Image (cartoon, rainbow, N blue to C red; front, side):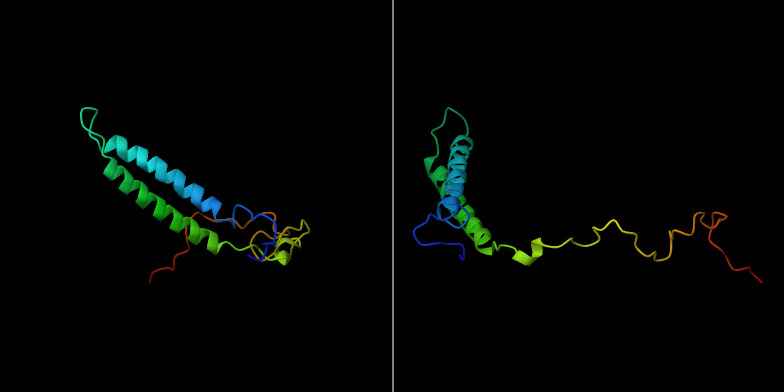
Length: 119
């Protein structure tokens, strides 16, 4: 809401129009699908009551979900987009054990773990 300016139209993300259009689209799709599939064939009458009920439920559910998602949206802080990030430098880093620059040949192993000798 901080990016709203008086006299200027809102962005689609912060306006009411976006979630309403999204919900209306899915309500129409649900209406058509329920009208076709709930009838049970072309010999029977179309079930407009079930289609309207399904469209209403789809409209409300998608509107609530879209409203919750748009309320939870928050811009990143400006300082997060600056800087080089973590480990983006190509400079040599000090080694931390295995794979040190000085160890060109790893120690030879016989293929199995060492076992204590039995007495």
